Length: 212
Image (cartoon, rainbow, N blue to C red; front, side):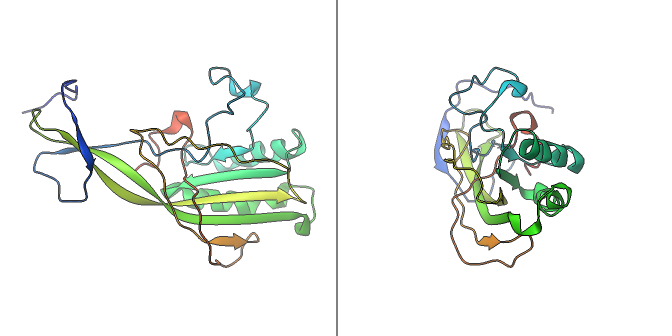
């Protein structure tokens, strides 16, 4: 018997996340993780084209959907054409190797001495939430949590830009991020102790990527 994917609006969500075994016939719907920074700055219209944004362009969520060359060109233009001295890059799960390759490749295409480019890497784990939809439509929807690896990279030219990090939105039901990581200094440095509250999210048009 094939069941429709259409939801019954009369269902009520469960009281909280659950880590127990799934009931037979239950389905899982993975919710979007919270973003580490807003899609656009609060001072900019969210409905306008990306090309019209003059702030926050140096905060980039890296996914596997775009090739490495596209990210290299974007980062290079931000530094050389737009004048940014600090880039904030984030990735989640399977996109982490993509970001690490970008981080090690970018200094080679920039007209700066190696000692002028400073890289900081924060690793951590993001807590994601999934909806558990029971086979019986009369039962409540419940939630379960799972962890996923995350990474956040800050690349500075010289002293970098004098800036404040954007505010993170933690509205439900998209879940909330929470991670502890280790700080790393230098492009290819070893991990050092430290904590990070960085969460990693995807571009708004790439929510279906790297979610498993």
